[in-house]
Length: 83
Image (tube, rainbow, N blue to C red; front, side, top):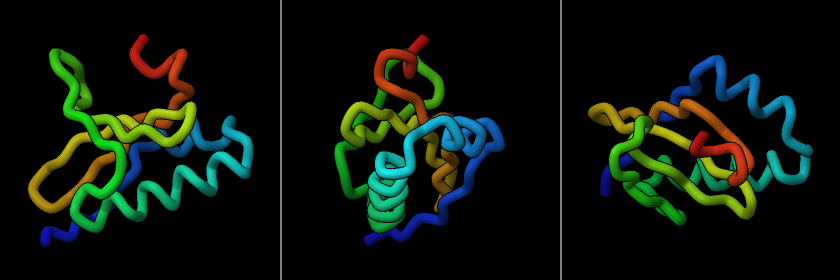
């Protein structure tokens, strides 16, 4: 099974500051599971960049995969994730 390294873009870290702490804890647990072979509610997006999303409750983690690295671009509420 593939193990991925997680990297955050500055914008994703900034997004995290606006999210309530209890939600943020669940999101980071889901991101940690993601590094262990893309576990979780992951979907490949069509005609959208970044290419993948992870669903965590009402939040979406938008990311791309480059070799053995997952790059987190945004962490957004589902209403604002795809604008």
